[in-house]
Length: 368
Image 1: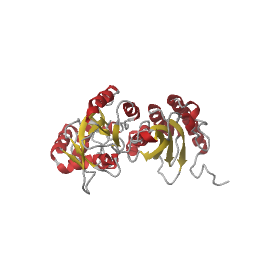
Image 2: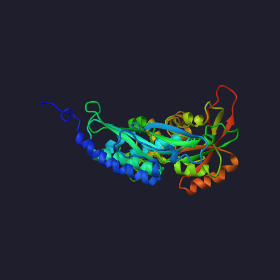
Image 3: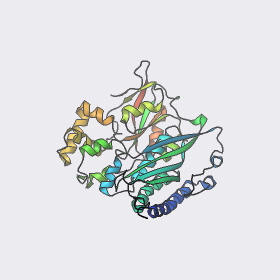
Image 4: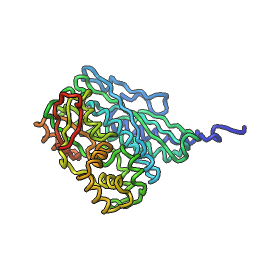
């Protein structure tokens, strides 16, 4: 035979080798999630089976909540830095943090991995990150798909996406309906740009080996998205949260108004109420002048964020600027919320308030 599947570019044996490594990683997430009898099969079946009867006890009306996302062009930095074990965490975080915004507890996750030429070792590193994200959020890696598509993806390039499914009792859904005029906004620290704005980052910061605080800036940019599931679910048991927002693409301006749909409130953000991580000043400087680096760039970025309205708006409309998750709650609960989150290792600050609006411009974000 002149041409077979392997000669066309698809290596079935390499796929089998990858799946064997996935199987062990997925099994670890079942154990960490204490899913027990809820998971009815393992990796390798045509579909993942998860019993709702095992997790809906005590709920009057269980509602499934789903979210899907990918890692975007942050992957390009991972390829160039030859570091593959963190972007899987990003993939999980982008999905479970979204599901969390409605008060849901993530149950399971499925991933999709695509490439031009499969290397089982690299694929396993990517899925290893997925498994870490699942374990840290008590979420089961229930299944997934690995697609090898020669000629469609460049050799050495991978894409990864996924989706999460969670559950919440209908009476406990958080949809912004309890938000009130004067509610406080509490922001929880991010770990950096998370998984958004990297098309801009890659354009203005092409030199990934530039020193940044003693490490290549490429490594700093690969810091994975924070997983807010455990601390926020814990906080929900202590106080009533009126609204939640995951600060992703679109930054403050697009995501804070999404706490209620349609938005009935303006968000007034108190400038200087939290510390903006240095990486954002470096990006701001590069947006204005990418010919400088080091301390000069850092100083320029800090100056621009404080004085240049155009740069300030661009940055807050693209990045999370150090706040990865925002809560709306009664002012009387702010202190308890911040103390709880700080104790959990998630620094938090009161960053602003909600104001009731009656005009067509409801849902604006402004700084004061």
